[in-house]
Image (cartoon, rainbow, N blue to C red; front, side, top):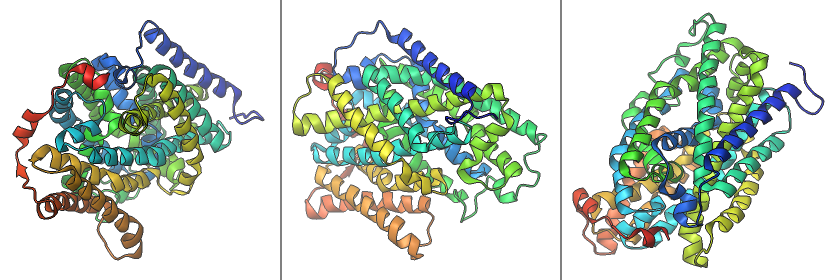
Length: 497
């Protein structure tokens, strides 16, 4: 492929920029007549006006970034498809269990639900801080890194930090100027193109190896039954995996925020179920087949597999289109996480510790600039990871299972104080950190990290209930139906003002 002195094929770059601008124009045309009032609901929940189509598109693209396309294909084995297949179950749980809960509680953030259940704000502040920790230190820089890496390996040969910075700035522009409305609409339009061309890559990749994906590939890269030392041991599909999916799809602010932005429960459920259909029918193939084909063609090349395969099988005249699609996916994912992070800061920290926000658009702009700079600065940290997706899943355990324990205790039991839930979350965070950074590297514990996530979750729940009983003198009672009946029904102006 001919390269310009500045860093790539000028035609490819022009097409990529042109399509990126076209998506921005389509988003503006869709939203140009929308009215804004600067409230929490307006900026962080799209005014409660997202139709099922935009809910589905936003959920799909918030998840499907280059973390999946680059990271999962970087493992170069079919086994990784289980992350997406099990995600189908996670979305069903979101649709039928958590969406009715969130709408009944009338919350802006998932952490507000915890405050309602425990009757104290301490657990809300702690969990929100953990969410922000994950978004700023993990999700945002990892997404920018994997997107910049792909664009670089696909032929747009600018420095990694320059590419990450450009993607971050464009994402910030959507967040600052249009809030969740703009992000969701842009994600949906981008998603159509991303999915279409990702499927095309699968077809072209299989054609390149005469539709024989198994030739010359070791059995461990083709099996769906993971061994004990594989990224996903088979037994974990029935233990830790389900809890990871419940956390990610049902209690994770960047995802649940989209489901909470519809006019009503029914519209939200339609959107979530549409996202589930896409998840099971399309996503598994596009995140593993290209990686296995890349192994057959190039050998074990880790996270460079997807970009190199695309450069090999995609016709040159489509390279700019695909670069634009991937850039759009990264921008959409980054903008979505940024909007969720800004919402958590504004609602859970600024209003509580600084003062009432007169105009959330102004605050959103300031916080988004800070997040963008921090995320780009952290991109080089992920450049040393052998597998970006495995690293992300392991780091997620620091906060995911402790946070999920707070939701489990709060939604299944009555009579538990906020302080007890805090003890459970802190216990889980410290326990998993000791496992990840001390015990496992030293060989002291041989459990797979997905198995240890179950240990972390179970002991966090036990720690919360034990502290509540023996230190605080409380008596927890298992009563999920009573919990649902007690969910607050505050006036909308009190919740979203």
